[in-house]
Image (cartoon, rainbow, N blue to C red; front, top):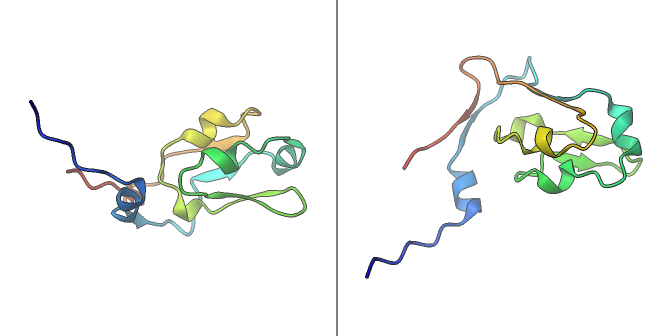
Length: 99
């Protein structure tokens, strides 16, 4: 009856994004880094689609905010409400491609 939809892969979509990184103002931070050490599951390391959160051997979590695609899943999924996420300053952040 209708046409088959084309296959779409998330990796292809992520590769099409343009980033304008603000090296002077991180839009993504941990409110209290020590909270992450005691966090059992480290949900942020699983839910971030670009892997911006990485657990270190000592239990600390580091953020590569430069790779953030501004989806907001980290601030929603953190069970401790420990993620400070703000919109990047004007002219910075992700430029999404429509179509």
